[in-house]
Structure formats: structure tokens, C-alpha cells
Figure (cartoon, rainbow, N blue to C red):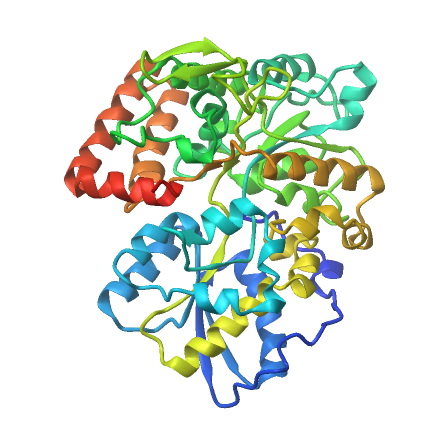
Amino acid sequence: MGCSQGKPSSEATQTNIPIKNSANSQRFDGITITVAAMDRPIGVGVERRAREFEKLTGAKVNIVTFPQKEVFPSMQQEFVNKTNKYDVVVFSPQWMADFVKPGYLENLTTRVNADSQLQWDDIAPFFRNFTATYKGQIYAVPMDGDFQMVYYRKDLLEKSGIEPPQTWDDYIVVAKKFHGQDLNSDGKPDYGSCMAKQPNHVNHQLVWSVASAFLQSQGTEEGGFFDPETMKPLVNNAAFAKALDIYKETTKYAPPEELTLNLDGSRKLFLDGRCAMTLDWGDIGTLAIDPALSKIPDKVGTLILPGSKEILDRQTGKLVACDKFTCPYSIDGVNHAPYGAVGGWVGGINAAAKPTVKDAGYALISYISQPAQSNVDVTIGITGFNPYRISQFTKRENWLQAGMSETLVSSYLGGISVSLSNSNMVLDLRVPQSALYQREILDTAIADFLTGKITRDQAIQKIEQEWEKVTNQIGRDSQLQAYQDSLGIE
């Protein structure tokens, strides 16, 4: 994901990876590529491989990085102004509509289809068919796979004879059970749950990880944010109301400062052994084995996001019981809807770049994504790259070499595999101005709800009204078309 934990250990920073020379068939002497990316940690992962690419191909790679909040506006401004400073953009798939519809990005379909070294079919279908594509055409190459999972203290649950939570109601029960106990043997009471609920940070993504299980059950194309036929927000209903109640209740079993915690803060608490559970991206699995950061390397369990035994009836706005019709992808009667929050960073090419620079730029993003490089990079926490290839969660060797125990490898890759193979994966919002819908409107309303400034129902009304206002201002028909295109609806 886009935010990493603390400073990398010197051992991780100095890791030297044997390189399979998969880029040396092409030379780009005298060609300069300028890459725009987020600063940390994704920029770190890009930088590591870009320097190798220079040595292999003769190209020069300049990397310009931005803090997370500035990545989109900085890229968007350069595209709109047509200054063409950036030849390659490493961006969130959420911005695909913003970048593709105006023609800013090169269509990479032909290049990808001709690129055997990229091993496109090895990329998991969710990332191949949704995060990399728009309206059936490929505009980006995945470098990272982002979706959220629950991490838990395996040792604590096993000792207590408690099964890992299968539903969000179970999550509350487990959090309540361990809250106030000394979980790391330092003589101080610890916490049942830790999440990064700092305002204008990732609240909007965390709450949707809870809500998705109640909102979407018919597969990725059903969409989990709006009705794909009307663009009506899926918020003013019993399902989203229940999700908000659960999300707020987790705060009862959390550290007192949770409402100001960012990702670094929540991760540190979990890695210090002070939390029974946390909700996060794939980074926790690799950070947990870094001795400079983690005190619980062999005590972490990984889960697909908890689900629900009820699902929204979109006609009535009520919750109905799951059965084989209402929840066709359910597991043991529980509807899981793994949420592809962000979706994973991808590399695209500026359509206005010179042809020779496009060739070099594509070779660079292909090189970073190829299994020879990426299957190692996803095991190293400082890169920010999380698994997105099938081979990355079916082959255990790289994970074991990175320092994961057999137990953690099984749990971590199992959680990833179950999530990625779920046909009900929820695609993050990919329409123009997605940041306005989520980071500004949704996140602000959630923060006000958590702090008691507004009630749950007021939060729902505020989100619905302001989302509708944005949709109408931009144009309901065009936003609906963009939403349908992002879901792959013909």
C-alpha cells in the first residue's frame, strides 16, 4: 500500500537481489525517462529497479516523487497543462477514468499482448481485468496489489480456543474478549483492535472494508458504491447503517488515541504486540518479519475480510438473510466482499511522450512487474509492493528466503489466495473526482461521526446529499457511464 511503517532496517535496505537480465535485449542509450510516483514506499520500490534498468539498457531514469496527498493533483496538473514533464506515471487505478477519458494515457494493449516476459496471465484476474484495464483495454501494468485483510494474534486466539472472526459481529466479540488484557507481557493493558482512524487519512477505506460485506454479493460487476443503473449512492440503507455502527463500536476496544492514529501508528502498535487484531493492507505480512520493526514475527494470522450473514436488498434498502440466491459467492453462509482499497499502484505511459521514450518507458514498467523482479520485491516491506501475481502466492520459496516462517507463509498467502480468488471482490471507486467523493466527503463525515459531532443518520444523510451533488455537478450520465466502464459492464 501507499504508506509504510517506520524506517527500514539496514538489512532490508541493503538487500542485493540477483537480477535475471530480462531487459538486456533492448538498448535505450541516450534516452531519458522521467517517472512520477508517490514518495514512500512505492517510490522506494520503483527506484531500486530503475537503477538496475539503467545499467541493463543504457537509459537514464529520473524519478520525481510526491507525498501521497499530492500525487494525483500533481500528475493531473501536468496532464491538463500539457507540459509533458512525466513520461511514466506510477498511479492509483482509482484515477484511471480521470487519466484515460481525456486521452492522457497510452493504450498498452498491443504492447502487453506482445510481451512474453511480462507473463500477463500470471497476474491475478482481479488486477489484470480491473485495475489495469478500462473499457476492456489495457492502460497500465500492475506493480503492486492492494486490498485489505484482517491480521490477528494467532497465538492469543489459539491459546484461548477462539476461532478467527468470520463475520464483523465475530470481530467485535474477539476484540471485546482481548481488550484490556496484557498481550505483550509488559504489565500494561492492551487493545482488542487497532485501526488508523486519523481524519482525512484512510478512514474512508477502512469503513468500506466493513461496509462491503453488507453492500455487494453478486460479484465485482455489481459494484459496491453506487447502483450501476442509476448512480444512486449505496449509503442511505440499513446495510451501511449497520456497517457504521460496527465501525464505531470497534473504537470501544481500541487505544484511546485511535481517532488520531495514522497507518504508521496503528502498525507500530500491532507489531509491538499491543493489539489482538488490525485491519490493513498486505504490508503487515512483510513488516512483521522485519526484526527492526516487529516483536511478533511468528504470531501473526491473516484473514480474508470478515463478512456478513445478511446482505442489502437494493430495492427495499433493508437487510435480508444470505442464501444461494442473495449471496451466491458466500462461504459457509457468510458473504465476504474483499475490498480492493486503492487496488495497487500501476505504471502507465504518457500518450504525448516521444515514441522512443514510450518504448523505453514501457520496457521499464514491464521490467519492474516481471516475475523475476516482482516476486522478490513483494517480500520486502520497504518496497511498498504487495502480492498481485498468482505465482507470488503459490510459490513459497521467496517468502521463506525473506525470513517468513512456514506458519506465517501459510497464513499470509492463504489469506491472500482466498481474497484474490473470491469473485465478489469489491473494486475501489474509479470515476472522475473519486478523491472528492471518498477522501473529502466520506472521510470527513466518518470522522465527524466517530467523534460524536454528528449522529449516524446525519452522517448518512450528509454523505448521500454531497455525493449526489457532486454527481449532478459533473454530470450524472457521464459519471454513470464511467462507473459502468470501470466495472466492465457492457
